[in-house]
Length: 213
Image 1 (cartoon, rainbow, N blue to C red):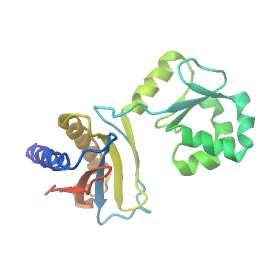
Image 2 (cartoon, one colour; image 1 turned 90 degrees about the horizontal axis):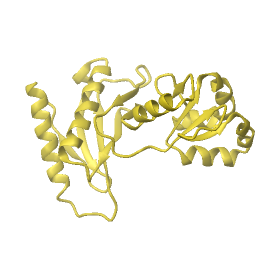
Image 3 (cartoon, one colour; image 1 turned 90 degrees about the vertical axis):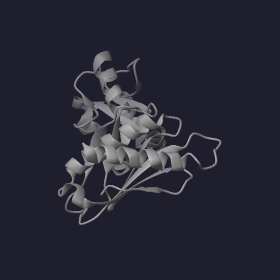
């Protein structure tokens, strides 16, 4: 508990420091950077979805369904053949942050879209992104879950994740940082021992270090 209070204070100080930088003409993203140590990414691939208390934006989500839905942009099974065109496929993947799919369509989705969705980290997964029925409740529940979740994939011993926007309150940013940090510590093989240091920055600023010891 004491550790969490100390961490909270450190994040608060870092945000005060960051807010002293000159204002930009756009809303900057708040990035959390966690640098790891004694951690082999190849041996322990991290692929987590972490729920945060405050969403910073609504993600652009599309669904692969067997018929059009009024609750979400839909790519129906009949549309799949359009995407044999590589350019159209790449544009589709760029346009959306996240894709969901009906379970029964997943083999076809993997065949048609997998080669581009996979490397982009946007393939619908059982963890987050597959529904049995494309009904209003299933779709809206999943959209809410996606909008309040952050995906963490570690490809190198440094994890960078956008945890908010600068126009959020300090309290909201702090709560999001703590949610991600605590879940990350749980997921690491040696808990805090695997964390070298933590930094926080806005899009256009230099990172500010947060002491965690």
